[in-house]
Structure formats: structure tokens, C-alpha cells
Amino acid sequence: MAWGLCLTLFQVQAQDDLLAQLEEEAEEQTRYTIATFKGTKVVNLQSNEMPAEGVLQYTFMHRFGAFNNDFFYNFLGLDNAQVMLTLDYSPYDWLNVGLGHTGFLKTYHAYAKYRLLRQSEGQQSSPVSVTGFSAAYYSAQRYNDDLPRNTANRMRYVNELVIARKFSSDFSMELVPTLVHSNLVEEVSDNNSVFALGVAGRYKITNMHAISLEYVHQFNPNQYLDPATNTLKNYSNNLSIGYVIETGGHVFHLFVSNARGIAEPYVFAENTGSWADGDLHFGFNISRVFTLKKPEKLR
Image 1 (cartoon, rainbow, N blue to C red):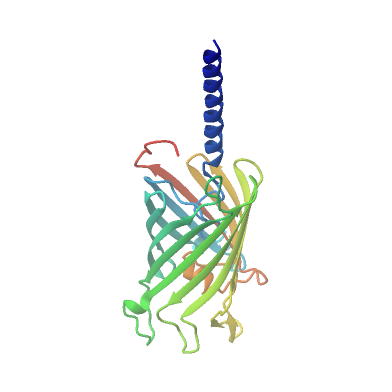
Image 2: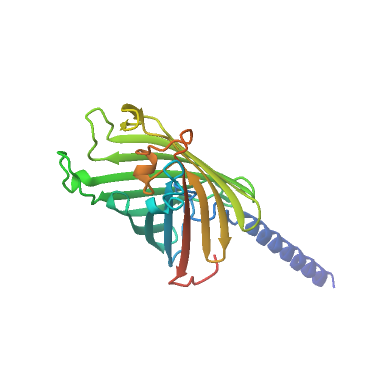
């Protein structure tokens, strides 16, 4: 009788110890932060988000003509609009690759986006997400000048390091150190490499609506000749304000920006637009995803 009672107590104690161990292991499991931003871009800056493994994404980006350039005469800016189309795919959950084209300077580009670190809690904890973005741009524009426009000299490159954090279910921010390199510049005094720092944030109003804001500051901006005043001016820092709408498989970004171009080199290092002068452009980004490879299990 005594031996049976002791055996029963031992089994109960062992079961309690096993349950406690399982609960402790469950608590130690890594919990990754999701939906820091809605979409792979904030406005012009990359976000830390990437399509899931096996997902194909098509993005349509549109910029209207400037408000201060005969806006109504130019049919609300549509007559001077610019468009960029991109198509990307994620062969792995940490890697996304894509191609794109914009009519601004007839630019083609290829890019890769790669996840280095994810914000998480639990067994593996990280306060931020870190994502890299690298792209090469080729301008096929026909020029009537004396500069050597061979293939190498038509190339530009952009590298971004996106350091993002989701502070709450409603508020997220990111810092984006950025390097823009041009193989050919207009003047000997121009910098081939321009260093910039982007800051972006998103505040969620409802589950499907949010406000976004981004600013990109150049530390060594190049100059351009302003035809209106015939004086040299620094290229402008980019400032954009947007409104985000999510509808199932689509994400709509509506925004106002002082950037005329769409591709990163022209936005971050060759932007002549000014908020003070009313040189603003309304635009939108629309993305649609298609699942080509279904995940083996829910992650």
C-alpha cells in the first residue's frame, strides 16, 4: 500500500515537472514581430517588409506633374506623369529579387532585398528588424552632350540598410542609412557617391488605414543649375506624406512628395523639388501579390 502510494506521488510529481518544462519551453519560443509596415515601401524608402516565400508581387507606382506647373492646364498633372513598374519574387523567406522600369530617364533596374535580422521576443530576442536593399540602375536616355555615355557610365547604384522597429500595434519607425553611387557625374566637383539618412514612420488609424511620413537627408549633396534663377542650388532632401489603405491582396499608398522621379537615385540624390516653392507631386503606389508556392506549414 505504501509503495503504491509513493509510486503514485512520484508519477504525479514527474507529470507536474514535465508540464512545467513544456510551459517553460513554450515561453522561450521565438515570437517574431509582423506587419511593421503595410507594404514593401513606405513611400520612396524601402520598408523592412518582404513578400513571403513563393510569393510574386507586382507594383505600379505613379507620380503626377507638379502642383506649380500649370496643374489644371496639364490635366491635374496627368500630362506630365511618370510611371514605374516592378515585378519581384521571393525564392526564400529571407530573399526577394526583382526587376523594374520607369520612363524617367528611361531607367531599368534590378534589385535584391534580404532580411538580416527580425524583431522578436522569447528564446531569440531582437529589438529591431534589419533588412538590406541593393539595386543597380541603367539609364537608356538619349543624350545630346559630350559626356561619355557608354554602358558603365549609364549605371547608378543604391544600397539601403533598413533598421525598423514596431513600437506598438499602431506605431512603427525606421532609420535607413543610404548610399547612392553614380559612375558618371555632370561636373568634376560633383560627388560620385552621396550619403543620406532616411527616417520614416507609420501610424495606424484603423486596421486598414494608416498615415505615413518619410524624410531623406543628404550629407554631401551635389548641385545643379536652376534654370529659373541661373544659380547653383543643392539638390533637395526628399519629404513625403502618405495615406495607406489595405484591401485584402492590395495595398494602396496615396501621398504627396517633392520628388519628381520615382527610382531611388533620382529621389535621394538628384531631386530638385521644393515644398517651399510648391513643387509637389501627388502620387500613388499599388501592389498586388500572387502566391505561386504554397507554404508547407503555417509559420
